[in-house]
Amino acid sequence: MANKKRNIFLFLLLAFVLVIMFFVSISLGSVTIPFKEVCTSLTGGHASKSTWEYIIINYRLPKAITAVLVGTGLSVSGLLMQTLFRNPLAGPYVLGLSSGASLGVAFVILGAGFLPSFLSEIALSSYGIVLASTVGSTLVLLLVLVVSQQLRDTMAILIVGLMFGSFTTAIVSVLTYFSTAEQLQKFTFWSMGNLGSLSWSTIFILTVCVGLGLTLSAGSIKPLNALLLGENYAKSMGLNFKRARLVIILATSILAGSITAFAGPIAFVGLAVPHIAKLTFQTSNHTILFWSTLFLGAIIMLFCDVVSQMPGFDVTLPINAITSIIGAPVVIWLLVQKRNFQ
Amino acid sequence: MKNILTTSNLTIGYKSKNNTVTIAENLNLNFASGKLISLIGANGIGKSTLLRTITGIQKPLAGHVFLKDKTITAYSPLDLAQNLSLVLTEKLPSSNLSVFELVALGRQPYTNWIGTLTSTDIQKVQEALELTQISHLAKKKHYEISDGQLQKVLIARALAQDTPLIILDEPTTHLDLLHKVSLFKLLKKLTHETNKCILFSTHDIDLAIQLSDEMIIMTPNLVVQDEPCNLISQGNFATLFKDEHIAFDAEKGKFVIT
Image (cartoon, rainbow over all chains, first blue to last red; front, side):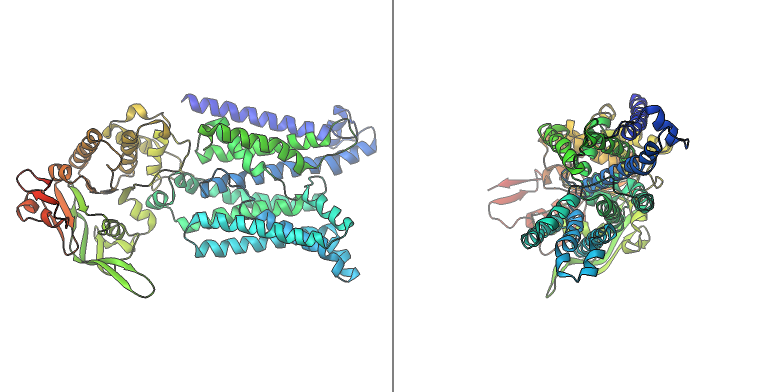
């Protein structure tokens, strides 16, 4: 079929763009490094300046890999949520996972002052923050799972997630009211998102988490297609709905939870990318959507990363600001083009 | 004539915390292959509860529903999906599904873990499209077609599921007379060509009388199943609505306003 050829072409194009973006992301930064030297460092050779090699291997390469993991993970979890909740505005945020992570981090950063000094030092280390946000999002995950077993209505889970989000925001604002300027600054920096603070060992952990989440998502492709006709039709076509819903929520939680823990809350990627994939491929078939969301998520996250680098300037912009600046107009545009807003 | 689904001394209703509401008792219905059976009754009489019970969604208060030779509760979701397909009244969530893709979803009980369509699956889908005369719509998106066409697409999806029994919940609700008649004639044709049993609930009683092989009438006191002409001669239609302004004219086979 003509569609098939078009899809193959699009996938080749996406793969090509992904590779290009990956190299662009590594090549650009506040320090100008010639492209040839970048390639030498990446292939294991020695660049003519050892600082260049150090920057490439220990700073830019991990950051590019993080961008790919974050982009794919958040986008795929957004795709799962949108189909499960039959709501085009659903995303990883909607389940309240990011809020849970924020709450954990807020307690640690803003509440550290109340702890004895040796404890507060541990709490404020980067491990403390990762731990806090993991605990926060896991608690929300457990809450969501309990609620989803109790409630038959999927929409109710969505509302519970939203309520939890506002609850968290309120708690965080109460905490900020009692905290010092320094603490506030630290929390604000975390909430802006950061792709560049991961060491190789933490990248390994994140890769395992994202890999697990993506595997569960790939296993949910068929249930997701059945859910395109709604819960009742899906059940009548032999779907074990409760189990499928559990797997989908679990996959989302693992993806969004681990990513928020390591890279901070990153907005709009999970919401916007699945829509871009749906528009590009003009399909609802999740076999195609899964892979296209994967590729597009990685590409768009790398692109946002490149923009946040502000090549040629000394400053780096917060990644969360960039994803919002790019993502919000995309969502508005999609809303205006309502016909395609599936 | 083979019975596909039978109920034995079935009591339907629902339980809440404090009390049990019984809707109908001791139902002995049977659904045989090659028959078009309609289910009629006033609003709120419990048609949906009956459909939900015989499709295994809701548990009976007493008695059993047998699908082939097993009780319906003994079926796994997948086994059930290979024996019973549904056409529901609910609105489809918005999506980009094409007509072909939508009908192909009916093959889910037979496909592998990722839902790949084999050549058999594609052939079944095409047969379903041909039987419902919508092959020319295959490439259209499901939101681009009319309500009448969409109803045929949903029936094609149920056909593609390849089950001996298809149950439709008020399939003619939003259609005009022309499309109602053509849909009923389609159902009639399908039962006779494919030898399936098709059960549908409807409020279009005079059309159902003319086209159904058998009818099930639900009234507060009685649920009867028989051929339409027998039901007319026994005067069952007269008890359907308790209102002095509606009467059943047995000679014309339809309701008249008095």
